[in-house]
Amino acid sequence: MLDSPDQRGTLLKRHAAYLEFYAAWLGLPQPLPWWQRVIDIRGRRLHIAGLDSAWMAHGDTDRGRLLLGRYQIHQTVLHPDGDEADWRLALLHHPWDYLAELDTRSAPQAIHLRSDLVLRGHLHEPDAYRIAPPDPKRACLELAAGSVYAGSPYPNAFQWLELHSNPKCVRILFRAWIEGEWKKDRNRPGDDDGDGAVDVPLNQPPTANTATRSAGAPEVPAAYLDWLRRQYESIELLGLEAQAQHPTQLSDKCSRRMGWGMAVFGVRCRVSRVW
Image 1 (cartoon, rainbow, N blue to C red):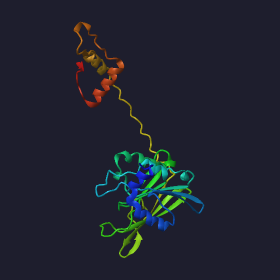
Image 2 (image 1 turned 90 degrees about the vertical axis):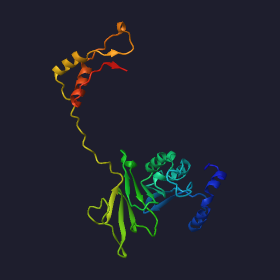
Image 3 (image 1 turned 45 degrees about the horizontal axis):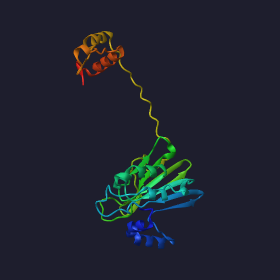
Image 4 (image 1 turned 120 degrees about the vertical axis):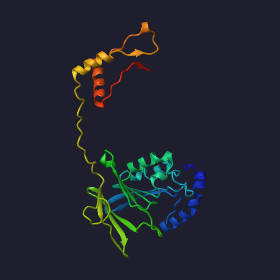
């Protein structure tokens, strides 16, 4: 549907006033509510993907029903202009749990894979999430970037971001409106030195955990294994005539495993039939 101009026009007609405003502000035609752009700053190439998560929005029951769609992601996040970018940013209004089930896995996966920094709105909690896959080059940082609001129990606050390239790192400066002025928010997790800022490395591999050594299976006493063989060496198979039955013998390896399991759990049982 999004590939068809007529059907796409029907779906996006509610965006007409916004697109008219945006085109006038930008000074360029803006036919779609999603976009991508390249900006050069101090010799660094930034690719920005502006995503529209509201094209299927209709009311207060949107959670779990919205869509991004592969068509939109291919035109923005996966656009070839971003292939050689030093920094790749994605802008998104709704959080992931507002997406429909068909989008909840594919969309975040594609966006996190091709983005260094994801800025999302809608929620007022200034939480930060670092996605750290095994390949450090695929690391991504997701931050809250909600707009201004009034009449809310949340304190007014903002985050100032600095992008550092060598090494690749995002520095987050937290500021809160306290007693009539903007002050450093020194209460954010990760701000160990109390300077109101947190550095999040993006090309640093996850912390290596020390390998846990297995204690191995305990040695089962030989006398117990001999008793186990004598007591449970045969199993009656249900459904076979008595003259056709061939008792199944427990191998030495099997009895050792069985003995270890019973010894560990303190269980005594007799296997008489296999269903």
